[in-house]
Length: 431
Image (tube, rainbow, N blue to C red; front, side, top):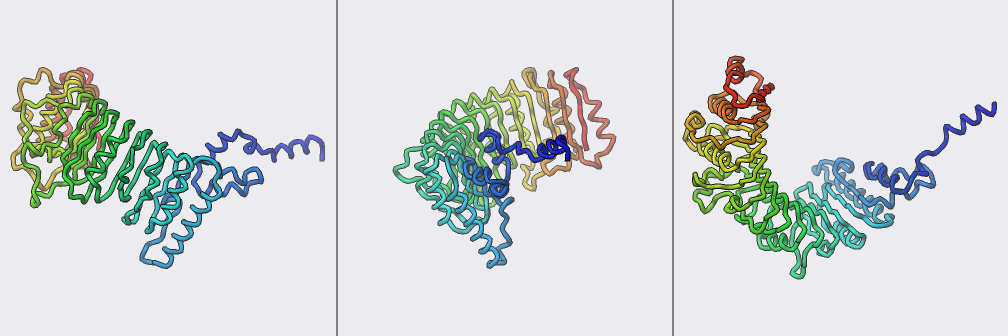
């Protein structure tokens, strides 16, 4: 073999990865699934414990799937194996752990207590714990002593801060989803997090009917669940608000007076720029008969609404929002038909409106789609709304309409003929 051949052969086996800087190797390992990251230990002696210093540990159901619980014996065996893997990873880990995610099928909180205790002593900053079996996790109280935590996400975890809890001074985002949440404890918790910027609450089967949000640092708020009377106090920085009410059971009683308005303080949220009203939120709000002279969310720029364009109360409430928000620049409406209607047709509502000189001055984009994904049906209420927007949005750039596949071609032609106040307006139709 020639000297040149030997040189080429040796070049083939050069290890170009092991000599990378430690922080680069950590970034590579963090991009791998946890199981694969640990298995890099077999590559060479240099790689044997490289995984043990990565600061982010993720154990989820995609990487660690569990069998169907109908086979109890197999499920228990897989569960024991998963617990053993997590114990092994934590035992061999060196250095701080900044992020820990556990999103798996588990039935016991005992192992979780041990892991949280370990994390509380290792510089944890982000914790994600999600029970996927519906079994509640009772969190170890030591989690409330993690003062360095910045992100906390808890699903089906019993949330019970101890009496001596003084808050998370560095917490930036908090997500909590549970069937039972103590209103008082949650409200106090929010006030004890002085740098909280993002708050998400999932509230489903609780007996509580109201929640007061008080946070001077809060930027984003999202609520999903049963009807809840929301109060906002001292939230000057709040810029994004999203509410998703599940359908109200009218037989059980529904909000029906001004005392049950969706947002008592919406007119005081001067910083709101993005408002998302999902599912039946606008319907619940419309029940309250919001006064026509009500002014709210003056600086709103982005509005997204799920609604029934055939229900006059919902349409009237939407119109009130339009008149209250002169800086609105983007509008997204997902239409649906509810089996509960207010009994008042909205087909001619838009034609009846007058005094619209201050409407839609800054509106540039409008999306009109269907909540169930089929596209709009092209009924009269939908067409009248499209006509109204085109006739009043003087700076409109795009109107995007998702149409159902079998929409009559004559209806499409009619839409394209509507008068447009904006010379820049383009109508984009998709089916």
